[in-house]
Image (tube, rainbow, N blue to C red; front, side):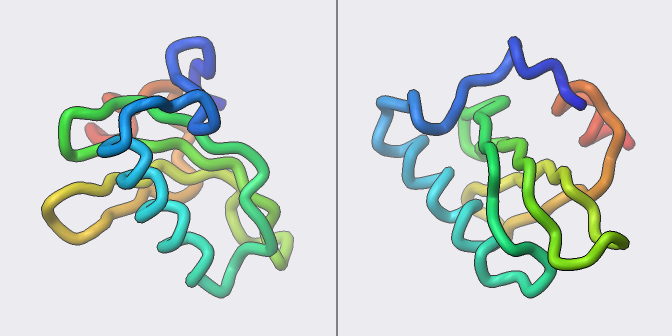
Length: 93
């Protein structure tokens, strides 16, 4: 699990631009068929793109419970099931 103490819970965000990025990330996951629900979401980096970390409840046991999501001016990208502790490690993987 990532170093949560180095992230910010999305519920605590104040900046409207960063909140908008988090909404885009959340909507992408909610449209995906593999997960029942998002259980926790965190901001790891925001300077466009935004990098978010999600914990989710999968619909099946073979689906990962963790995801790094990158959103910004380009298409969204995600890194599923990565065991990286930081967003930098996830991007480097």
